[in-house]
Image (cartoon, rainbow, N blue to C red; front, side, top):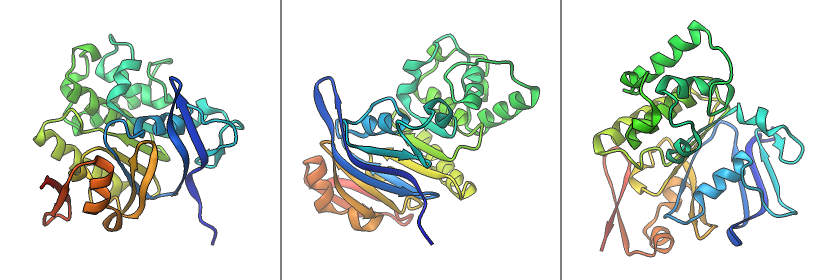
Length: 263
């Protein structure tokens, strides 16, 4: 049986601000997979997400397909409704006066603002999700008054309001304290278990955030794939030392999560 891919990228190079951020990338992700992308600041992680969302375009000759849709031949507005993108930087694209509930409900149409009237059932579902992610108290609070961690929780609830085919978690725990991060990672594990047909991409600069459920992935450095494959094969001291340019030693805990230490 032929494999189905949620993401197919061939020969993609992306230039932003006159610089080549992504260099000749080739990458495939099977439908329903759970994959991670690990890289330091400036590795090209966010640019890669922008390319997947159609906000940054590779130079001529590249091929980008997401959920079976070939870029340049598809309606990106409709495609984005099938993708849940969670990123701390999304708050910069929103109306700062939107409330927490407004932001969660905007996920219905894949926009960052409410563009239509919503039903009582949709409101109830949104509030239930906010309660699940411990942000129910933010229903009427404006986005600009929230902490970065609170905004991320709102974005997670927004992402799950519909049934997306692709979920991109772009450093969702970066602004959370230890307790908040561990809670969020636990919820991400539940999400992965409860959505078996949904492809989930988890992007991080923290090695310890990579849960065992993300069984495959890649290490990104300077806009290039440094290594890719099974989690245990690529999360090695040699690969990580090269990617982060630091003498990294790894320790694995009983939950099969890796933790980085410096020599």
